[in-house]
Amino acid sequence: MSEFAPEESSKKGVSRRGVLIGGAAGAAAIAAFAFLGGRGGGGSTTAGCVTTDLSATEPTLAVSNWPEYIDVDDGDYLSTLTQFQKDSGLQVTYTPDINDNNEFFAKVRNQLGACQPTGRDTFVLTDWMAARMIEAGWIQQIDKANVPNFDKNLIAALRGVGWDPNRDYSAPWQSGFTGIAYNKSLVPEVRTMDELLTRSDLKGKVTLLSEMRDTMGLAMLSDGANPADFSEADWSKALDKVSKARADGQVRAFTGNEYINDLAAGNIAACVAWSGDVAASEDENLVFVAPEEGMMIWSDNMLVPVQGLHKANAEQWINNYYDPKVAAKLASYVWYVCPVEGAQQEMESIDPTLVDNPLIFPTEDFLAKTHAFMALDEAAASGYEKDFSSVSG
Image (cartoon, rainbow, N blue to C red; front, side, top):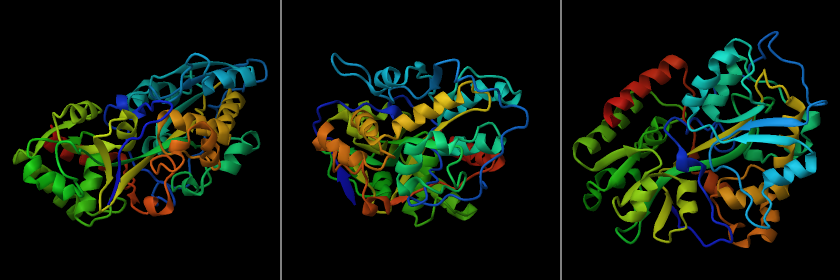
């Protein structure tokens, strides 16, 4: 088991997951983290849908991302966004309008399906949704000649994912972990999912995540099953375990991001949690645990839609964030797993307290504890979500 309590830093971390509304944590599909197969090698762009790239004549870029997932200007501190605009000469319209993968999918699916512009040149989605869009043919292939930093500096653990084996369509923005958190001022350490679901001193003081892949992934791990390759029997056993904990009053609620405030206030004592929320809280009483049986992992990815009007400008954006100095600056603010090789060394001059933080720069031993969730087709995903909803309410 590994425990991580927040440390003081020169900049307060903020959580992208702090505004998450279920559905965003999906199959991680990270090669050295845990292989996710079954989606094939990437889709081909819908014939006739790609628009003429206007980057050469229009120095603009429209980006959609999750709220509080980028650093911001603060006095003399120039954010990576502001610095990019100065360096590139591009005017960026940056909109934090992705609160949930399914919700965002609903916003753009009709336009993408009809080969119409969405008003966005690039957006950031979690692995399972990125795979879904690539498979549908709605994402353009990245011109590797325009992103040398990406090709050179993407960490080995994120190369060769099952749904985009050559990273032709997707560039990771940040990654993170799902494990257990507890308030050490209230209860002794919580080491496993079984403890969370059965320990008497935690009864009525536990919350689980309303995101199916996170909660059920950990539940299956606690039974010795592999969430990246599970059977119906594995699913049913884990679902029964979660259902019993709910019926017995062990579990107070299934929540989105609000758990972190309840944990800090003492309204709950322990919960299933996202790594960045705990790190960003900077509360010394809150501890993030990599459960003994393992934890879940996910990644969010930059994508260029087929109707993006400024593809080359979007590739400048991607290339910029794979500069190790820029990546380290961003990582010092968001406190999630940095996907850029060399950023750890650059962190020495930005915030030395974060250089050895495994929630940002995980070691191979730390990554060995991580697991992905199995790739699901639409019918299977719908069935599992229905099962989980019957328990979570």
